[in-house]
Structure formats: C-alpha cells, structure tokens
Length: 407
Image 1 (cartoon, rainbow, N blue to C red):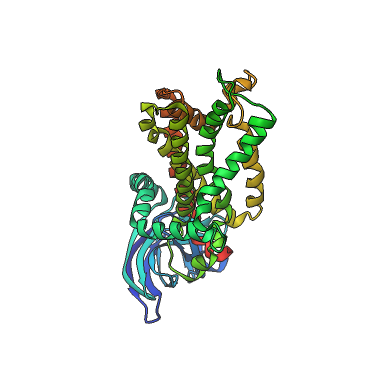
Image 2 (cartoon, rainbow, N blue to C red):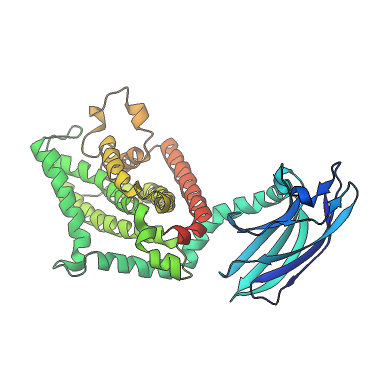
C-alpha cells in the first residue's frame, strides 16, 4: 500500500480540512468497496498520542486490483478546542480493521486550531513503527522536562491558588489562617496523648516523655505534608469541575496546588519543632542543613502520587473513600508513633520498602541523631521519587483530555 499526491487544504467550513490523495494497492489481494474496504480518519493529541475522535468511514469506489490505484477525498472535522492535532488517515479492511495498526503505511495530517480556524495543515506518509521510533527520544525528553516546565510556566497561578486554598480552608472561623498552624498542632497533640501518655510508648534509650515527643513529632512532620494532599487528590478535579469544563485551564497545576498547601502547613510545624528542639536540648545538630536531601524526594513522590490519584479519581469515584482507609493503614505501617524496634524482625525488610518508612527514618537521623542518612537509602529514595513523579505526570497528561467528558 502506498499514499501519493496528497493535498490538504482548509475547507470553507470552520474547523474542517479537505484531503485528497491517491491510494495504490501494492498487495496481493483485490480491494472491494462493496465488501467494506474503506478509508477513514482518527484524531489524536500529537504530544500524548491520546485518541480524541474518529470520522466516518468512506468505502472505495468499485474494485482496486493489485497494482491498481484509486483516488480518495475526505472531509476531516477537527475539535473546536484550540490546540495542535494529528490525524491518522488509513485504509480499513473489514477483516483486519485499521491497516495502519497492522504495519501498513498511513497518511499523517498535522494541523493547528485557533479560534475555530484551522491553520498550517500538512500531510505526509508514515508507518506506526517509524513514528514510534522517531518519537521515542522526543517523548523521553518531554517526559523528563514537561513536569518542571508546567510548574515553572504556571508558577504565579500555582502561588495564587495555594494562597486561596490556605485562606479559604478556614475562612469564616474565629482562628482564620491561624488554623494552618493550630490544626497540625492539635493533631500531633492528640496522637502524643494517646501513644505517649495513655499507652506510654517510648523511643530508644530516652524513657522521658520529652524524648518520645521529639521522636514522634519528627515522624509526623513528613506525614502531615504527605497525607493531606494525597487524601484530597482523588477529588481535586471534581472539586474544580467548572474550571475543567468551561475554561481553558491548566488542570495539571491543581494537584501541585494541593501539595504546596500541605507543604506550607508542614513547614510551619517544622519551624515550631526546631524551636522546641532548641529549647529542650539547647542546640540544633548541623545535619539540619541536610533536610532538603529528604524533603525534595518527599515532595516529588507526593506530587507524582497526587497526579496519579487525581486522574484516577475522575473515573473511580470511590477512590476518595478508599484512600481514607489506605492512608490510615499506611500511617500505622509506618513507624511514626512507635519505634522500629517494636516491629517483628522478619517484617522489617518488607516494611522498610515503604517510602514513608525511609523518609521518617531520614528525618529522625537528621533532626535528632545528628547523623547523615545512608547514601544507598538516599539514592533509592531519589530514584523512586523521580520515577513516581514522572510516571504520575505522564499518566495525568494522557487522561486529562477526557476529564471534561466525565466530570
């Protein structure tokens, strides 16, 4: 099969293209229009290869014997939303389906829609295998750079949404924005009362309640910044459904906004924790300066997980309720309110694969023990965080065009 003499031009109708080409039969079988042999088109997002829509199939006229050819003319209707689109034009066999999916050539048409008008249409012949090979390096480059570009490009919007999120969360209450600090303090005080006073849990060689409080709160600091955005991620797109449906809005920033809002709360708690540590021990270890070595992968891991859950939550509405239970289970499987030594030794290697297990351990080593976390642990943590961060963004990007149809 071969496509030649392809010409594409904008139709008089807004948002439409008129495509003409000659299709040559280079196979061993005769094509028969009466038996369902046809040509058709599908529209994809060129950046993510997500399928968008499909046009009507048009049967060929008569028969085309091996070595023969036929002229085809198609009218392609592009989506009304502004953006770049890629059209796959291919022959269809009633027994095999889309022939381009079976390795046969197809005709690619790239076009851009702005204000309902189509511009810069161009057509070329290609194969699916060749496209995948040619797109591999650009895809990998976009996969590594696109998340950071999105965050940097929309940094002012993220800052505005974060301020709005924090202020709106407690607006109308007597404490107002002070609840940003009071809420984590009350939560930590509750856990301390239950485990430190009622159950009399203790850490390491320090039997005092102050020692328990310091170790317990060191584990709560990363958990606060993690659990809050992860718990809200499954319904964040539904919460902002008006933005998704009616506006050209970068929905990628919505999980980012939640993560930063949770991080702000945690940072306030960290400042108070360091002040308490200085008051109780009279000094701060120099390793406090190394906290970003654990904090940065913690944020990357949290954001990647939030992107994944936010996209999945659009289609699985029960996910929000499921995450409430899973986060509670995750909390008690992480040695925050009890020492690692209380765990059965046979389970420690398995539970230690929990990223929050390692993050909590890293916080305690840096803040309380004045020790540098092991390089092997840091390398594994950074690698896992980057994989989750990049994979979460790719997952979110591949599904975001379908959000408006579901919410």
